[in-house]
Length: 201
Image (cartoon, rainbow, N blue to C red):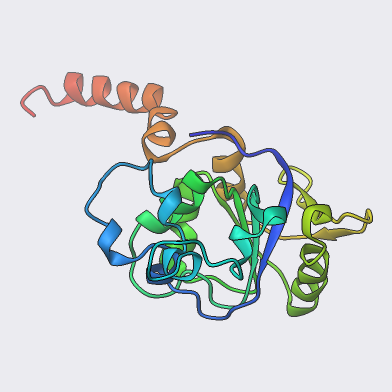
């Protein structure tokens, strides 16, 4: 998994509350078990018209936000079903950070497993970040995970809290398997001891 240290990129404003995982990636795209190729379907029901053409009013279709790496979203982002395809689609599109006042628990946990940083901020902080994001191509934020800061386009800085264990996972780029393998020496030592003490097992 790609490490997350410092991210600088355009932030797209999506001030909608209760964006559920079906809005992030509709059910018809869940047949694949690959983590790639889903970016084109991200927010598809809002991004595309019925004839398949782009909806010019949707934020990610606007020229300033086509390369957005950050989404500033309304409360309760990622609610609904537990589909891991939702963070897969975000990551495949290029979104590495989602900022909101709250996240659904399963979606929040799935983000860390897929190299995405979900940041919880206060309503007042979200308002400031949405104001920054409305600047279009000038809506560049810098998220520094090590320092736990978000720096706006004018240099203003916000601080955020994050669980130390989850912070470590992203800084080191560890998925569940890689995290387990970090403990391989201890596991091997334990198995060797058990094998000698209880050879019948």
